[in-house]
Image 1 (spheres, rainbow, N blue to C red):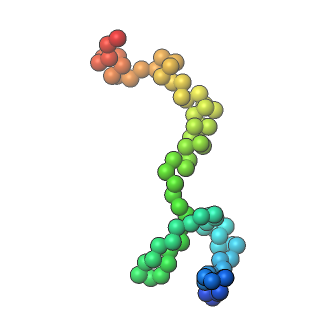
Image 2 (cartoon, rainbow, N blue to C red):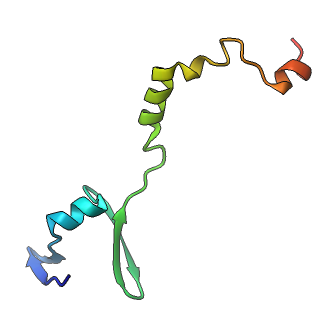
Image 3 (tube, rainbow, N blue to C red):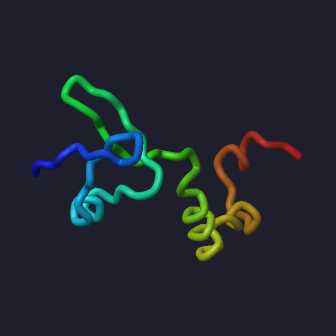
Length: 82
């Protein structure tokens, strides 16, 4: 697909069709990187971005209570002394 570089205020930009944005999942703040072939646009990967979903999943399955419920490991059974 071809696009034109256009004037946007004092800067220049490229209009990205909605269909392409939906297909790539790009939204909000993105990272731009200069490559030998041009400019790469990608989502910013934030550390711990998916933690909310993981904690919700653990809470829904009560998985965070496994240790408190008496589940023990080999270390607990052989090595650990109270």
